[in-house]
Length: 70
Image (cartoon, rainbow, N blue to C red; front, top):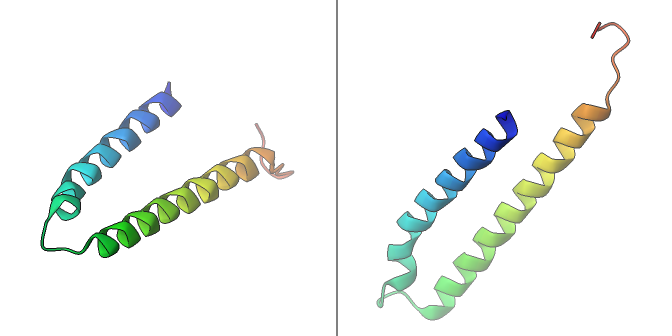
């Protein structure tokens, strides 16, 4: 249940960021090259962030602490 809530919150944040960035990507005075570069960089950063989060979660599940009782 907690994972579903995190997913919903993440999707909501992404929707707000997309709505805010819409003005940048539809502005006629900004060159198409700049808009494409910013879009590619944004997608790359989000993808890298997702990969890092996924690896950290997997690593946290695999760690076995001998001193900690479950």
